[in-house]
Image (cartoon, rainbow, N blue to C red; front, top):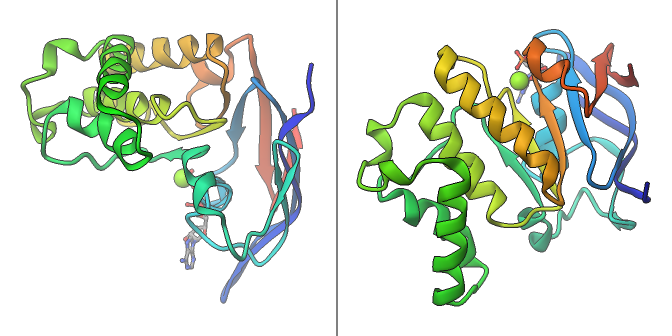
Length: 218
Ligand SMILES: Nc1ncnc2c1ncn2[C@@H]1O[C@H](COP(=O)(O)OP(=O)(O)OP(=O)(O)O)[C@@H](O)[C@H]1O
Ligand SMILES: [Mg+2]
């Protein structure tokens, strides 16, 4: 396989009352799928938010596709490449298509191309029948699938999924699991923070475990 897509060295994060990340080292192979496990409160969300540039670290280095990233001045262009998907995604109260198109529009993707990509993403996520429904009327599982489509359409290098199947009923969970499985065939590196045994047991997924502020391969 190829060089690491993402490499973290000695990443640290402290809060006034607590040293949360105590020197995280990890390397994700490009195109690989990983789960990040660990007890509640061990720092999984914080680690993914730091990688996506949504939160500051105290120290350490991050390399993405070989380039060193200054964690103190997270480059704007990387925000489209390292994409974090929240467990309860925030969707704009407009159509699903607008939600999915928004990031493409921000990147200046021309209208025709945008429309094509949005159609493909809607089909991929299986939400075409919901195109006239406003996001607040969608179920949690449907919102999660729209959020996955919105992230995937940006053609990210790294997708960070935070507990994508938590709080979903069994049908919704099954559909989201199928999308996660389908991501295997996309040219994207995926890291999923989860307690979901079925995701952890997926044969193509490698397991990383966060404990006592450090990440170990399992
Ligand atoms: N801004 C903050 N100030 C102080 N403490 C914080 C802050 N943000 C997070 N924490 C603490 O850091 C710890 C790690 O939180 P985090 O959400 O990263 O854990 P997690 O592994 O994602 O947990 P879960 O499995 O419950 O989602 C928690 O104890 C949390 O209270
Ligand atoms: Mg979390």
